[in-house]
Length: 312
Image 1: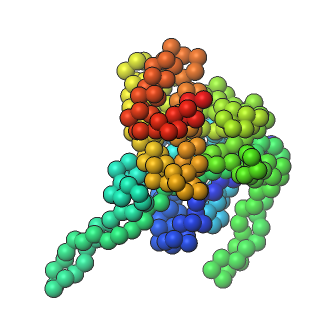
Image 2: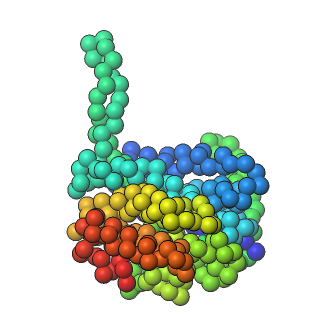
Image 3: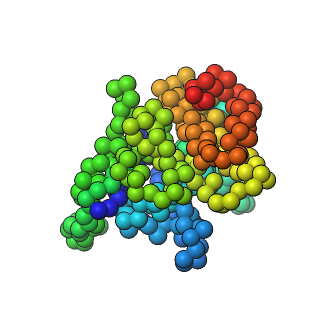
């Protein structure tokens, strides 16, 4: 029995069609994210969500990644942290965009030679949001190696197959109203949910538009930094992890694309952020404080148009 996750980059086909260099940067960004992880001491359970030691295999293919793991709780938390960090790596650009209607448009600084002197100049570039969607399957899983050819040489590459793979792909293609589920969402079934410990369940809840399935809410993973929050710490989580790091860039993206076919992706992204913090603090004395702060943040970000959708 094992866990297989299948995730792909939201909007990657459009990125490639519009600006291939920008699409390449998206791939490079999650590669850099992998280098940031696993810098914590062995045996430290406090930092478990911020490692990758539950990833038995991580196999990239085009804009998709397959994961295989045998540790359900650790994997759900660590996958969430990987996805969270991948978005946050460049999210400041979307929080304060140079072009509000096209927040992916940025200026990169670079050195050029002019008349024998080194001069710093701005160069236009595309920094697309790195958001993943996908599914996780739990069940029969096997790993074997198959022959492949790499750079003209025969080698072996890992191959994962089994019911968990089929389940993961099926979760990635779940539909609502005859359309694939919208937004940077990672779904799973009750079979996986039932394998999770109480800590992991704090960031997994029923999918808000498909409640027969569960949703791994990667936006809430940083709330796991403590099991014993106090009022000051909760306030810091709300200001930094809920508002500044998540809601502000997501709101900027929604405003930029609300009159396009991708609007629902970003609207659901914002709803995911709201549901994540509400679920994490549900059943605690802090829930009322959280709900008040959510409403204040919706007002601050001028999200009145979708406030009922976000809060229901």
